[in-house]
Length: 420
Image (cartoon, rainbow, N blue to C red):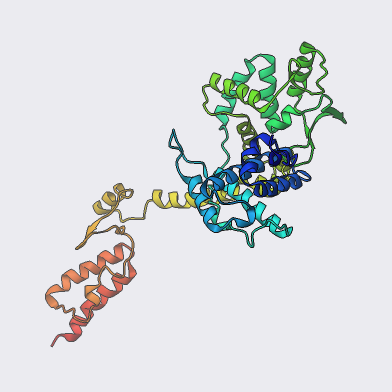
């Protein structure tokens, strides 16, 4: 191992960083020292993802600019070239990175620059070369969940499985746990408080543990399972005959049950979304759902409120009833042949041909523009049109059109006044 590689801090494996350390020891040391600082307060998964983001960026910029030796030398042009690389389709499948991945990598890079600048490190650039606008906007889709019919079918398929797959699926579906939380359940996670069983879910993604009620069905299944497999020294509540579960084995179990139920694309986290959706659709408060799922912020829980927004639904149906009443109500029409015909056609559109389209005003409604010519200053009539004008007036009265009726009632008077 070279002296440069030997100088790699302990945060990450030296083998992966050795090519960077050989070509640009100062740049590599700055990034790895940052990872060591991050490891003081962040979880291993965060360190690992940050390590990957920095290492991939370092490898790219050293290929792009072989003269680069330190973080301080990084400029905006390096970031722009890196952005182009991230969004360019890759061989051999020609697929591009997802926006979430691009945003995560650029975001971690931006945080790295901001922190070492704030800390006043010698190898920091004068200003952060990654702008907020560089991070692509990502979609905010609703959580994917199983509807009631699919969920029932899925749980029936789970009931037909061997004890371990059934227990795993029902624990996820009835508690809303994350996969990592299920795999880390301690052997003493089940406790009795009062006359009810509770489950202590260990500190996980959000760094805090919680207690949730344990469904009696799960209590029975756990007792049956433990009696069948016997004790083990793993210290875990659920194992595969002594071997710890992991997210890959759990998701394989869930996927197989989904295939048995004829449902594609089912994974463990979808069962968590399904429970939350079922709960909010049946009136469970957002505060209770947040406590059940272990959300630290209500913003995390509000995403489920978008699935079943009761206010939107109530107001929508109230308006819909009024609109339907408008469509279905029969107007009061005269008891004539014309009236009977119009009642038969009340649900059809009444169209009157115009010069460049149609007027769809129902005939029983008033319209100030229907007699627009008669109100024009250039309009002129005479005694020979009086019978027609009177019939127009009577028609307007019969159809409850007071504005037209007033106009056609006035026009014959004007004719009489203008007569010699």
